[in-house]
Picture 1 (cartoon, one colour):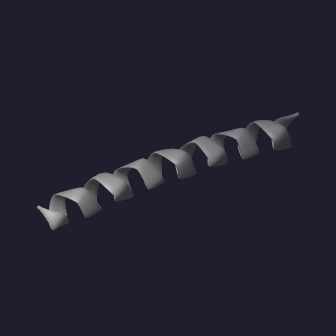
Picture 2 (picture 1 turned 45 degrees about the horizontal axis):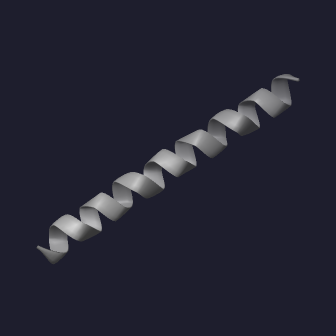
Amino acid sequence: MPSGKKRKRAKISTHKRKKRARANRHKKKK
């Protein structure tokens, strides 16, 4: 079970990182 919780946390972190990268890309383009 602890492994599953850790995996879920990593997934959320990845999503946030991707969102931030996308925002950064937009800022650069602007």
